[in-house]
Length: 223
Image (cartoon, rainbow, N blue to C red):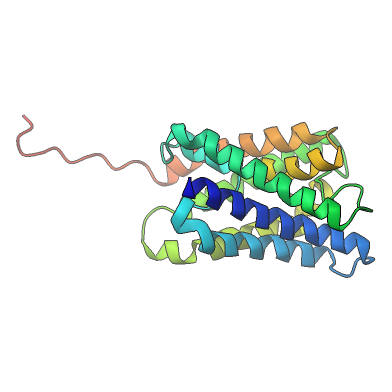
């Protein structure tokens, strides 16, 4: 249950700060700015990784949890707990923001600016890159673990910076589902549930090619 609580808190803070930056930006006539919003998302992801990484792994993202499970790095029996904690954390953050800013119509929901197909493809590619970074920095030298939060947070911020104006750069079904549920903007939510999951799973074969499994060394007793 400690891991579930860590995932709840981490996702709550991620959505409260990230979508909160969007809501404040709308309420204060663009004072936060788009680069500022992208920076908030990147920084809060890095901060939550360093805060909760040693407790739950700081997935904070159902697509990441499902991809790590498919890769054999996370036990399938804990998937329901993680997904529930992440979605509940995101939804709770959106409920709090809705009470603080009752005039916000979207609560920072991710909505496509162009066509649904354009946003779908962007979300697949963005999440593929993010998941590949996650897998790469968690493999190999121990020193990578120290800088993992920086690398992952920087990737989130970078992708939000250039793709956010088109697709919202969600890369995270929980981050999109929370604001959509509370604001009632569910029309395009399928994009942000399916595309990040597909992108995260597509990163697995690429990582496998870059880091093929090392064959086990036979014991001396093996004929």
